[in-house]
Image (cartoon, rainbow, N blue to C red; front, side):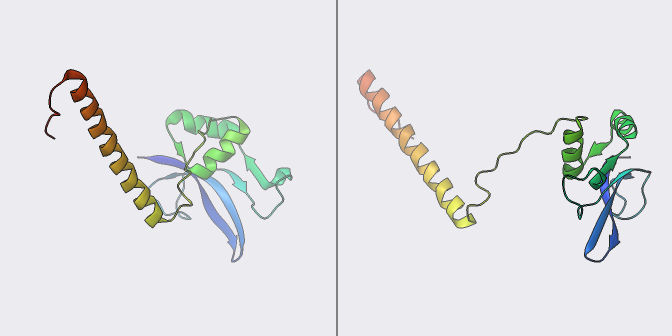
Length: 133
């Protein structure tokens, strides 16, 4: 049974409040869970301590059992010092798809040109004809 540590939404419309729960990954987001580990209130300012509350002993126990945290919960655990979150880098995220595709095609053409230039250079150094591609 794949177990995850994730957030389950509570609260009313336009007033989100999340419970941090351990659940089977196949269960619905706001549905059945195994154990509640804490809560997160995104409406409070970031400097308030009541914004996030986690029972770190229970979290560590579930992590030892093999539960995997979701990305957002992993951020919370990184702040608490329980787990290390790897920094992500996606500089092309903001570039529109057409431009990314054009850049990829240009890179392929440049690589092919560099390969043919290297082949011609090696052929000139050996005194023979360039190999057929």
